[in-house]
Length: 610
Image 1 (tube, rainbow, N blue to C red):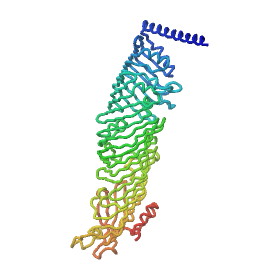
Image 2 (image 1 turned 120 degrees about the horizontal axis):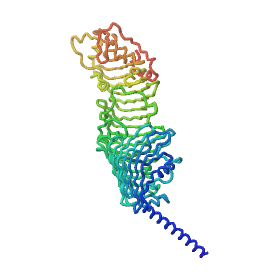
Image 3 (image 1 turned 135 degrees about the vertical axis):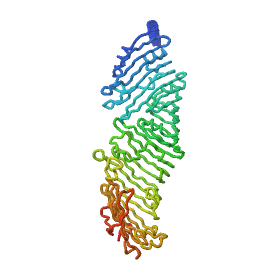
């Protein structure tokens, strides 16, 4: 038996020796007779492997102590049914490869060691075919094996003049320009340094990244360490962490930090326009697991004010939108620093039926300002869905009161959309409200409550009011009013001899507006004070921006010196005329046209009853 084993062992050694001999003879022959132009054969072989059209202008290989490869004009076609432009075009490639690593790659699939690599003029077009298949997956079964293990060890690599065009499943085009890329390592077990200059969506970018070694890279499934520094102008991004799928930028886990004088570059990189004069810092954890990105435990400064945030992005599949969830808490937000805002009212009201991104956001702020508009303790929940947008609810302290707003926008027939608003403000200061509305100072003090229930269908934001229907109710119970105003309204003759001073007590104030397709009827309008009762009724035309309201005091409530002459306020909203009137407002109050909620709110005011 031992003799038999020794014979078998000898046969194996002899056979192995023959393999080495033939390999040595083959290498000697290759060294003697090279170089070879393998363009036609390699193109045909790769076309079968990739299941794509492949053309190569020239491919010359010389074997020696170093295997040199010179390739020119490589083209790999797109998927059938895709864009006629090829998936890849490469102008020129020169490589020097360690020969024994090349044999190991050919026989066992080990990584080849490339001592030097130079690539010029590469264009990559990434997209999905009509059946949803990504064009960067090759062959009938898609990618197989360990892509990390087969990736070559690049000890000295340079790329110039590259570009990548990525057509996302949502229809967006992401463009990456690679002006220069370098990759270097002292050996397979030594750290790798990566450097690149170029642009992302036309935003110039420089990247420097100390990475782990190629030995670490080739170990499938193990976290690959990476430290990435990216700069675009004065905007800087730093990441320190690991990737389990570095070729796909997947399996990410680490710390992210951003510093920018404004978010403009970040918005440009994301493909979003606009301007924001807001210095920004950010620090938090970044993870990615397949389609799920998470940015958590974020803390930073925005316009020198602290904030915190958690965000999540789920990438949509083919023809499906991405989904973003956001939970943010700000100290102060100054919206006046946001540029590129369309404040003309010409913004289209309609929501995209197939948005590229869905949104579910919860945002809170201790204070928000936009010019003269200021609010505190703001809390809002917003959702963006196909053909619909909602704020449910938005709450805040505004003009001294507590405000709540529920807003929904849903697409209607044609190019129009329907906006519905249910809003209220309780305990507001009428002086602050008047100033914000541009009505000037009012000789009135107290607390005012306001409720609105409106809906309108329009194409543009400006046209919503002209189509609006619903109701508005303004209510006061208590407060003071300048006595001079009441005597003016009642045409009190005593004003000829003296100017009244002081204030009278407001017992109640009720104003009801019934709006139908942009035409409003004001009735009742009733102000009851210790010096008299004022009645009013009229119309508001939002199509023509005109007003026509008649006011009069009730003679039974004013002094014996009051003439109680009715007054008509009519004309353009911005400049109405005051005229005497022969008619008087009706003292009745019809609330039946209001919604049940508004009716209940109005009837809670004593002025609802005569």
